[in-house]
Image (cartoon, rainbow, N blue to C red; front, side, top):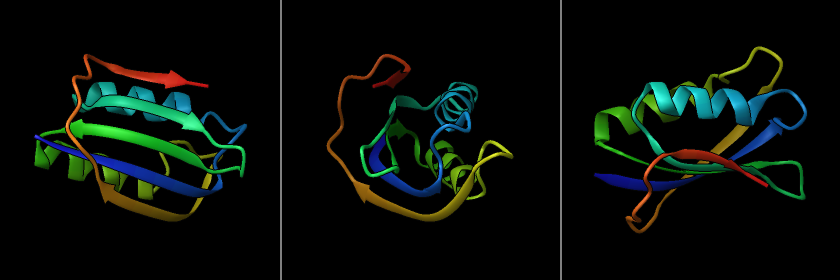
Length: 90
C-alpha cells in the first residue's frame, strides 16, 4: 500500500475534473479524496497498491476528462491513512 498527494495544474476546475477523477479512482480501487484549490489547481490524496496507484497517476497525467488540460502534475509520498473510499471534498 502506498499513499501520495498529487497536485494538478492547468485547466482543471469547472470542467468535471473532480467528478471524473473520483469515478476513475473508484474503478481502479483507489481510496482518498480530490478537491479544488483557491489557486485554480486540484489536489488529490490517493492510496492503493503500487500498480493501481501508478496507473491512476498516469491516467491523471493524460486528463480523465476531455474538457480539462493538464499542464503539470507533482506527486509526493504521504503517510498512509485509514481511507474507506474516494470522495470529492470542497
